[in-house]
Amino acid sequence: MGEPRRPDRVAEAIREQVATFLAEGAKDPRIKAFVTVTAVDVTRDLRHANVFVSLMGDEADKKATMEGLGSVASHLRSVLGKTLRLRSAPEIHFKTDESVARASRIESLLAQIRDEREHREAPSGDAPEGEAPTGDAPDRDPAGT
Image (cartoon, rainbow, N blue to C red; front, top):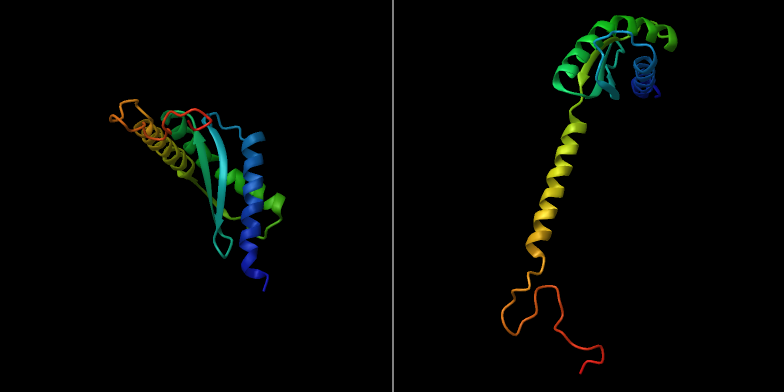
């Protein structure tokens, strides 16, 4: 019954090891962008692992970093095989994770919509005669006289 969860446990262990490897041991000079390992998806037979990374930097740095990650994948595979003590280490495939950038873009669009809405709903002071501007009560003293 515990077998279906094994790929999830292996994926999490791979994510931790890859993040550590990239932070401490990646020697490829093409890895220039700031790399964050966001997720790892492992096939059920544990032969392939898609490692999703988020990259910070300009487009040229991101492209060079992905090439560098591709070149260290085989070395990383051997490191994973030793540290995780797997019978056969999975083949590593690096993929860019655009979800962080997409979430940031959505958040900025929502903030822009909120700002526009607040700007439209703000009292302008140009209310028709006899009516208070939207959101304000008529001018009265606290005693109600």
